[in-house]
Structures are given as C-alpha cells and as structure tokens.
Length: 500
Ligand code: ADP
Image 1 (cartoon, rainbow, N blue to C red):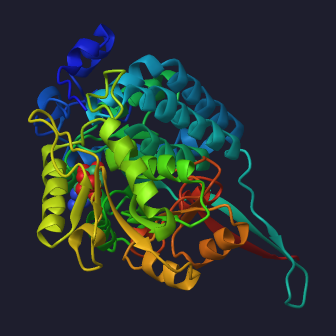
Image 2 (image 1 turned 30 degrees about the horizontal axis):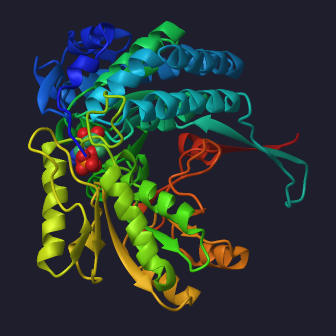
C-alpha cells in the first residue's frame, strides 16, 4: 500500500497542455471568462497541487448562459427535426469515444480515480449514454385517447421539451454524471446550462469543445464553471430556468429544492446513499468478498450507491471479514494517472478531513477498526480502505453518508427477512442495496422489502444505461437513465378537439 505522489510524470504532454492552458466558459457559442474576471483553482487530489484555473462564474454569467439557452430553445434547436438531433447526439458520442486519450487522463487527473476506470469504464459509459439517448430522440410520441363524453372527439397528447434546464453535477463521476443529464436533455429538445463541480470542471470544458465539433447549434449547451454557492445557487433560483437537475449531497439537494420554489421550476434530485450489502448464509463467499470490497472501495467509496453497511450472516462473517480485510490491505494506493494504482485519493482535503473525522467519531464511541482507519501518507488526500465493526445504530459512522473508502460490518444470526429488511432500511437514505445469495426466493422476497431505488443481487454498483436509477426517501426525486429520464425533460400537453 504505497502512495506515489508525482502524478505529472504520467501525463501526456497534450493532456498537460490542455489542463494547464487558459480556460473559459462556453456560453452562447463563445468562450468567455467570468464577468467578474475571477477564477478558481483546480487541484490534483493526489498531491494537493494546483493544476489549473477556471472561471469562477457567478449570477451574471448564469444570466448570460440562460439567455443564450432561451434563444437557442426558441431558435434552431426546437425547429430541428428529431432525426437531425439524433445524428448530432450520435456524432457527439463518436467524438467522446475518439477523444478517450484526452478525456480519460483529464478525468483521472482532476478527480483522482484510477486511469483504467476512466478510460475503460467512465468514458465508454459516457459515449454509450449519448448513443442510447440519440436513439430516443426519434421515439418521443404522445398517445391518442378514446373519449367517454358524448359527441365526436379527437384527443391526443404531445411530449414537449420542458425548456431551459439547469444541470448541476458532482465531482465523483464528472463525465458519467454529465452524460446522464446532458444526453436525455438533448434528446428531448431542451437547451442546457451545465455547471460542473468546482473540483472537476476541466473534463466538462473539454466536452464543450466536442459539443462544438459535433455541430450542435450554439447556445444549446452552455457550460458555466463556478462555486456551488455562487453559480449553482444562481441557477436554482433563476426565474427563467424551467427545470433543475441535480446530483450531489442531500443537504445541497434540499437547498436547491427550496430555491426552486420561486418560479416552481421542475426539480429532479439524485442524492446521498448508505447502501446495505447483505450477505446471506448460502452466498458464494469468494464472490461476496470480492463484491463487498468493490461495493465499499470502488472509486474510493465516492459513489452514492457505495455499499457502506455490510450485514453478513454470522456463519460466514469471519471468513467474509478476513477476505475483505485482506483485499483492502493489498490495494495499491496511488495517483489515478499511475496505471498501477488500484485506489486513488479522495477528491479534496475537505472530504478527507470529513472521512477521517467520522472514522474517529466511530472509534471514540466504541466501534472497532478491522482494517485501515485513517489517512494514508501525508501528501495528497489518500484514505486507507477501512472496515469498522462493533457499531451501534446511533453512531454517526452508521447514520451519515461517509463518501470515502469506509464500510461498517454487522453480523446477523437469524435469516428472518423482515428483521433484515428492517435493519437495512434503518436509514434516511434509499438509493441502492445489494443482496448476495444463491437462494432465488430469498433474493426476490428481500428485494421487495428493501426501500431503495435499486437492488442489486450478486452484484453491486452495476449501472446500465437502460436501467432507471434514483432514490427512495431522502435519496432523491425522479429517475435518471433508461426511458424514465425522458420524463424529467418532457412535459405532456393534452389536445382535445371537438369534431365539427
Ligand atoms: P459534495 O458535498 O459531495 O461536494 P455537493 O452537493 O456540495 O457535493 O456538490 C455537488 C454540486 O452541487 C457541485 O456542482 C456544487 O458546486 C453544487 N453546489 C454546492 N452548493 C450548492 C448550492 N448551494 N446551490 C447549488 N449548487 C450547489
């Protein structure tokens, strides 16, 4: 478990030149600095060093971007036939794939994740998401209704784009989160003001270049970089944004929902999680060990679906714990750009401090550290993959979303599915869960009892572009991916005609 700290030696000169170059925001087809002239620094989380500066957009920049998006919405974009729109989105997907050698390293540099996860996972998934929604652009049909009232009628619905949408995305999957939001919005004919997270704006700005190259008309996709409290808040309260789509913390999600009440813009929220990983007595132990480790440590645990509460049958508890601890201790920590790294840093000092504080709180309230237990090294923002046992339901480590490579483990004795579901559901969140078993009946029964938007069986963190993803309870509003995401960006108009 060694932490290399010099990520720059793995940088291709073209990537280095783009990252350290002068950055501007894409607004109405122009590349602009912030109206205030201010910038914000982007850091390499594996060293804490500044690698770039991007415009710190604020209210005035958001206003400009909204005007450009409004103009494009009532201009060429809405009059373009769906098949043309589909072609442009497909072209954008091709470009994303062709630019994997830039997008992959930029993504890993700014958010710290292993380069293989960017190049072979996130970038292809991003391209695939655009292709999937390119296909939907030509399939957005209304219905015709058979009317009950006397007389001759013809009634039908139209699915119309919701309008100008504001999209605020997080730093954990900067490109995938962008695609989950931008692709269905484009397919439905909306225009966009996108705000990437302040920690990871560079991949989004590179994507802006590809939007232009694909030939998407100016003003359809606008990208405003900036802090959440400034640019993000200006978007959520903006009177001329028709819809806000947000992925991030539950706390900020609530602020956005409140800010959106001014013009009652539509809101969709994909928020935090505290997913249970439930291992039944008959589970394949090797598979469960690999699955639970990846559930907890994939993307350094910075995934809203991360499996952070292990419930393991006592019969196999020791074996599973030993297996997960062994894997955790073997994980090679290092900068995302180093191809030998298996676990990158967490994204920022603030996140690292929050994670280590929660671990300490767990320890001081009586929990035990099975493995890991704090920061790794003293450079960059590395956290040791950590498993905690002997927890109780009131501890912050069990209740709060940690968003780091940390999971709590609890044995259970009785395979009473109602009791198991009660424990698994004992959280304000409801985003995801996984069940590990070969018992088909138990798997389906338990899946039905779990209160979460996704239940994975013998897998975890499996997202496919066809499968709706979103939260029960305080994990959010609405579903992204799949056909359901189209509902977020369209509204139904009913037309009723009395036949003369
Ligand atoms: P995290 O706590 O994991 O960084 P956040 O929910 O703070 O996640 O951030 C996710 C996104 O929300 C980022 O793009 C961030 O800039 C934005 N954001 C943060 N605060 C606000 C806010 N008050 N209003 C709107 N957006 C915000």
